[in-house]
Length: 103
Image (cartoon, rainbow, N blue to C red; front, side, top):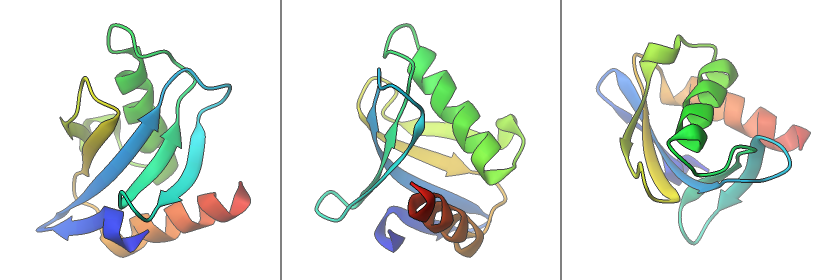
């Protein structure tokens, strides 16, 4: 999972693969070939609803304010890049690994 999380100055960049329209919103796991964290979203990919749900989900998961979570690439694509502002990669990885073990 480390390949999908990287520190860039004071921020953390996440490489994600999104499946919209699922039964629940959750982290599915890690795809080692694509080097992306797989996330399922319950919202459909229509009119930005899935993107809004993704940002809200990540904000809640990492316990950061919603303004500190930015979609920087892939607004109309299932492969997305998200920036968590003023975060540490080690902290983000611990949360992701704990969440992945629970599922």
